[in-house]
Each structure stands twice: as C-alpha cells, then as structure tokens.
Image 1: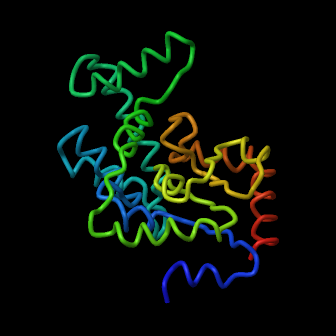
Image 2: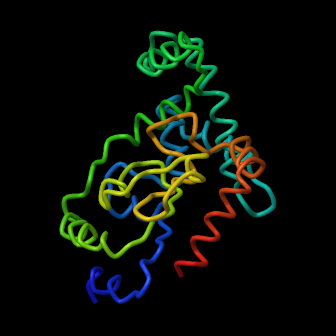
Length: 217
C-alpha cells in the first residue's frame, strides 16, 4: 500500500509521532544519539577512546545514559573551545561571543550541534519516497517530533513550534518540536540538566500533547 493511500484511510486527520529513524532514513547527515555524541567527540579530540571513557562513566545498571554522557561531553567541549579562541572551532566561538555581546549566553556545544545538523543532505535514493510523503500532508493533522533538524517541517510545510510556543498554537498544520530545533541552540534538549528542566517546566505541554493524541488517534 502506498503511503498516501494509507494515510487517506483515516477519518480524522492523524497525528504522527516522528523520531530519529525518520531522519536516519532520509538524510545523509543524521545520527543516532550515540552516533551524534561520538561524532562531536571525534571532531573535538580525534580519539574514540576519549568518547568510550565518557560512555563507560555514564553506565547505570545495564543502560548507557546518553543524557549524562552529553552533560560530560558538553562540559569538556565548552572548556576546550574557551581555551582555544581562534582554533579549529573559531566559527563556533564567533557565534558564542556575538551572542554574549547582546547578553545572551549559549552553549558552544549546542551551537556546534546546530551547525552540523542545519543543512539537510537528503539521500538521492529516497527522493521518490519523499515526494510521496509530500502528497500526504493534506491528510495529516499535526506532527510531534523529537528531532532537532528541520526535515519534517520542510517535507510537510508545517509550522514548527518549540518550547512554550506549543501552548499558544493551533494544532492543525503544526510540528511540535519537543526536544528543540536547530533554529535555536538554547532550546536543544540533550543533557541531563536539559531533561530535568523539561520535566519540571513543561507539565502543561505534556498535557496538551496528550490531549492531541486522545482526540486524534
């Protein structure tokens, strides 16, 4: 069954939940959580064992806590860039200091994440499937995604909503970017602290998303 035919069978406009697998399928420059952090660590140090040491320190029980790993990596990344103003990551430092001049502090780590995920390098072999997805957008109510990149809003031509903007929105034709977006490094949710803040601050957002799922199964 074609994607367009499948979606058109719904009486209500369905809400889609889209995770990392979507970007991994269609983009050349997409990563799993583990792969993204490894890529950053390799660019920073050129040493995979540095990353594996951090990963070993982030094991809890039988599970690797990538939010904890991201916290550790962010700390090292930000410190190294602060000590090497005009080195390999000069462009990231430039962005950091431009924002600081305006009184806005950003994480160099998150600035770098947005820089590597911002460009959409779509796999040539998947263009036919993407064109099929574009045709389905009139049958989709809204989309919830944990992805930082802008692939979803580009394909479906939906309005991206981040942070508290989720509460002020018309759900139809919107992409709820619950873990942030490359358009704003400050809203990227990736570290342990980010997730703790999300849990504390966004009860109303979770309630709204639950309501959307209930009314649009």
